[in-house]
Every structure is written in C-alpha cells, then in structure tokens.
Length: 422
Image 1 (cartoon, rainbow, N blue to C red):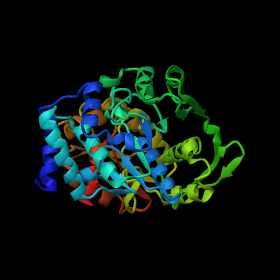
Image 2: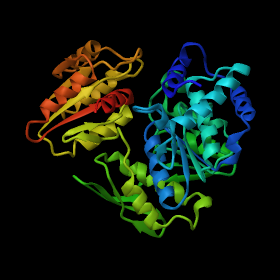
Image 3: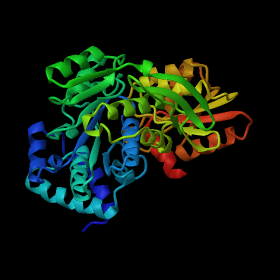
C-alpha cells in the first residue's frame, strides 16, 4: 500500500496522462463501484462564486440539527483531504488510502479517471463507509457535465451567484454559464437560486424544462446588515412569516448572502421540514468559519480567495468598509484568468496605496513580473515578491503601522500557499 503522500502525488500526476470522460463512462465507473451515490440523500450546489461557503453553512446548520454530514468541495487550500469532509472534518488518511486503492484498481480495468473524477469517486466510497445522513456536493466546473452530476438523485439543486469564469469551458456569456450551472436541476426536486443573479431567466427555463420545483429567492429577505470587529449581524426573513437575526463570524460582507441562501435553501427542502429549529440555524451560522474567505490570518492581514471579476467586486465591498487608513494588496494569479480586468478593477478602486505582485508555485501561474507590469500600466505602485513567503513578510511589515491592513487575493492556490506558511 502506498503512503498518503505517495497516493496524493500520484493523483497530482493524473493531468499529465488522462482527460475528461463522457457522462456515460463516468456513470459506468460509479456503477462498477457499486453505485454508492444511490445510498445517500444529496444536496447539489453549483455557481461561480460562493459554492463552498453555502455548502459549509448548510453543513454547520445540519450538524447542529443532529444530522451526520458528508461534504465534497474543491479546491483544497493545504491538504487534499480537505475536499472530503465528515461532520465538518477532513477524512482520515486511512480512509483516503482505502478509497484510493479501490479507484486505482478499477481504473486499471476500465479507464484512468481525471484528477477531479478520481477524488469524486473516492469521496463516494468514503461516504459509503461513513454512512452520513446527508451528503453535500459542490460542483467542480459548470454543472451539466460535471462529475458530481453523475449522481442518480438529489434532494435539491442550489445555484449561487453567476459570473464570467472558466469561459474557455463554459462559454463567454453569463447566459451560457448559467445554462451549464442549471444542468444540476433534477426532476421534481427544488432548484433554488437568487432571482437577481445574472442569467436568472436561463436558470428558470432550465428548471421548467427539467420539471424541477423552481424557487427563485429575493434578496429583500436580508435586512439590517451591521459589521463590527466581531463579525456581521443581519436580519433574515427565511419564511414568509419567520424572522431571525443571525450572526456570522466573518468580515466578508458577501458571506451574508451565502449564509442567507444556505438557510433559505434548507427550509425549502421538504426532507428537513420540522427537523431544523431556529436555534440550529443561529448556532450553525455563528459557528461556521470558512478559511480563505476574508480570513484574518494575523492581526491586520486578511486572506481572500477572490479569483474572478465578480468575486473581486464583492471583495472590494468588504474592503471599503474596513475603516483602515492604509491598505496593501498582495496579488498572484493563474495565467489563464482574465487578470487584466481584475487588476483594472482593483487599481481603479482607489482603496490600495500599493500592490505586491507575487508568483504562485504552479506551472499555470502568471509571473510576478507580468503581474507587476500590468499594475504599473494601471498607474498603481507595485513591489515584486519572489514568492509567497516574501510577500507575507512585506505584509507583516506593512501592518506594523497604525490603522494599516494588508489583503492577499487573486487565487485560492495563493491562499493555500500562504495558509501553508502560517
């Protein structure tokens, strides 16, 4: 048996010699594993931004309500096992290795799954072993042809915000992207989304076409949002006659919408009617912290996984309210992202006095020199950092000054590197 590190390294090698398989091939692979997905009650979450947070808020609420949960998310920040969670904790190395060996053996007989397919199939086996009451699946890319959409049934589909990302795979309009995300809609099951999300009409059409129970939520259910250094308080009308005033332990204003979507989704899933109390909701939201989402790593140093234009718009909304006098931005990104638009948005905000360009340790990463040149084109002062460690040291020096904050953003891979350093 390989060690955990050896197994992870072998999974990381997969993109070099395999490619995505057809939906029919994926379903066949699952069936050869014994169709573990047919043994779970599944909630499916798709969207451009906020998927992981919505999954985590639902997971926390369900745990407070006494449910045993399984959760499959991506990407991870530091450890590959973060993607496969049981009751809010990543799976054990032993469970990971048992699942790896079964997928490895079947792959030699059928076909070698892709990186994402491999981990998804492993998650299905680990959940089969652990027997959670509810499994929450976050899509990797899109929805319609995503490996997670191989599951045979689900309690509900949830779509978070829609924006332009992964356009080379999903299309270059919000409508085409929304259409791919809405592919998670299931016959007779709720499809839940915000009614003002870009591409909402396309999602509605998909729900009708697939004969789903369409639930389009209005953000007017959210009111009285107040942020301080403890977190954010807000009011939520989660049913037509039911109000609560939750607290979320974050400085990220965009998490209010994610928390609200998690709550409104759960109360609209018939399976949970009468089984989730207001106290479960309040304590579940209060107790959830999600790494890499406006996370305060050290006093005055915040880490956010924003990596597309829509996410940066939300990110800037939180930065704008922080009360800091001087702000430093540390930015690293992947070469295949529309980083020129993102840098234009960040530089044009006027919120940062200086940027630090950093190269992420990945073959896909853009160099710090190209990033720095782009900031300079946007008339923003910039420092070049050789790696994440040097960038973090610059951030630590910056926040020694009174009322000074440093923000690290641009990629979840950068977030993972910085988390690993700390």
